[in-house]
Image (cartoon, rainbow, N blue to C red; front, side, top):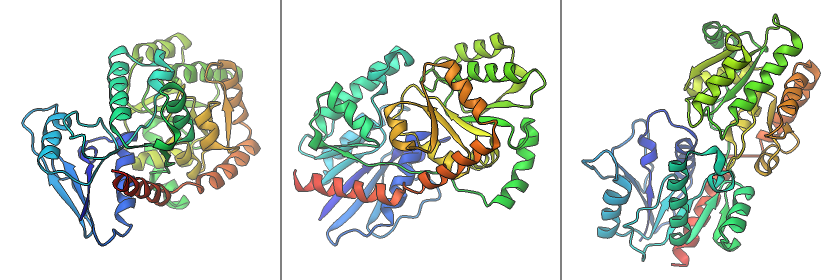
Length: 379
């Protein structure tokens, strides 16, 4: 019997962000695919998450732990020493330092932006991520990456052999609300945020240096100056603050645009869908990304996209977005001005619908299963 042990503890976290959402949608798609006759799956968790029904051959392995931290390295590591699966898959977190070397490991490296762009990370986070990636490279038989861009970074910066890396592109995670229902459901949210359909620029991400939030604020301020104090345009920055919060708040104050900026904090999937469906455009000027699910979600909801002209965005967006330098305020502002034009918005909206359809979680799951079975075969 082949047992696939999966660290699924990310499923238990509240207010999931990118990596946790990846785990949920990937595992949900993997569960829809039939296991072979001699296969079963164990999902290692600290507690059983609500709302997930497991198919035949899948089961929870609950591993309680008395400390708030250390579950991965100590509790999960001890379990792997005592009961060894055929392969361990770590899709979201660090590989346990206690995992026996005799167990093949497959892990996902979502990005190495901290190494390629260290200036946008706080030193403690950068060091922690560096240690985790170094451990993953040493320990894993197979490394998954969400993009060819991240694969190239691993090959060039860490000298990882190409045949150890499998690219498993991701896909949108938000449900699309039907147009008429969306108008009705969105009205209260738009009223609450004091914004008007088609007249706000939307960004949904952590508000931090990596996401280039200050550049977006400066570019939006230039747009406001161009069209005058009475212009109706509003910038909605949805997400929790991360590294660089003081700089972001300072930029809003310096540009004197506080009345035209909305900071709703972390928003639900349902609210994200409503905001995307009515945005003038979606702005995602990140300095670095491992993939960029938000741009596909924006495209799927009909929001024209402006993104950074970096390798991974060229890979994910194709010709369906306006791509600008992540260091050029004037270029980003010009892109925002472009989106004031109704015809241009419609052009990029149409391109976006087509581009988003090229990605699916079924494809991601199929490639992931191939990688797991390969790891068992080469143990």
